[in-house]
Image 1: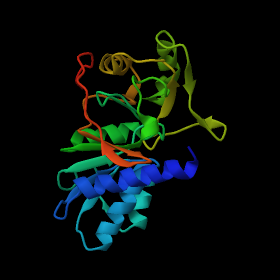
Image 2 (image 1 turned 30 degrees about the vertical axis):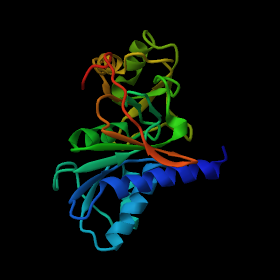
Image 3 (image 1 turned 60 degrees about the vertical axis):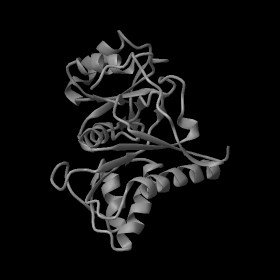
Image 4 (image 1 turned 45 degrees about the horizontal axis):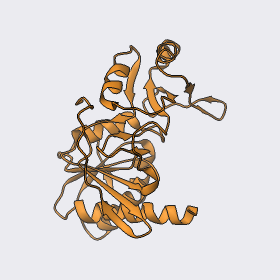
Length: 238
């Protein structure tokens, strides 16, 4: 599939999320980070330009910038009205709506907003759908002081752990932390793995989002569809 076709799928899914789940009179929306969430921000900006009065909680400095460009006022987490719906993308979506996120490095704030929102809507292209999580390396956000210790502990569990780099230096999140990308392979029980990883001293958050997504919209060449969630007996609740 060409890059332009993939971009069109992302645009369609992002626009559909706003059209279906954001209504006039809503006061606060959570907005994610990444190439699919970009289109939800773009669509919401058009609604604000039409006179809709609402504020947004952004999951990254980049999303704050995009909101400012489109006239969307932002507030901090729980500094404004309750978040009625949060819209974000994902790197992987399993049939039970377990997600891998964090390819853009905003996983901690993305999870904070998803947890705070009354409803969490995920928008993806169909290339993000997987039978089981694990094709995409799992991002783990860590405190820099503890990064070497966390890496040592992770290597007891995972065959490949890489410190994320940018321009020859460690990638630094908006929270001032590092990210370790972990190639676990297939993850049969994401909830259990997330629980175990967060027990390691120095781990701030993982890119495993379990039992958070209420809806998943998928853009494809035939249009936008909403997935039906499969049940899961293996994932532990957050």
